[in-house]
Image: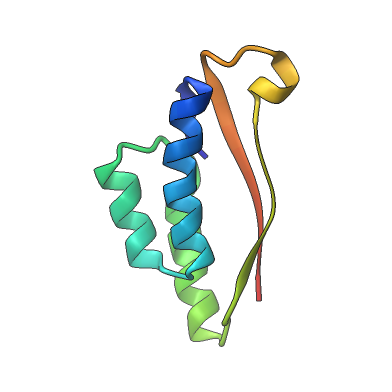
Length: 88
């Protein structure tokens, strides 16, 4: 997810991106990442996956876990966000 911003900023940005993934909204994910300047690595493949998943009949996505690197390192000034999401 987002990289190298404060934890509070990253959580807001990641929340917006996660909402689009959970909605199976590939275009919405593209737009929010571009418009909100979210430095999400792998967002192109995620857009492709969402597009393919919907074409293959996916109807739901579930957030398994979200965390930032600050939870492990203790450094909340510059974190990386991580999300596990199941698409079905």
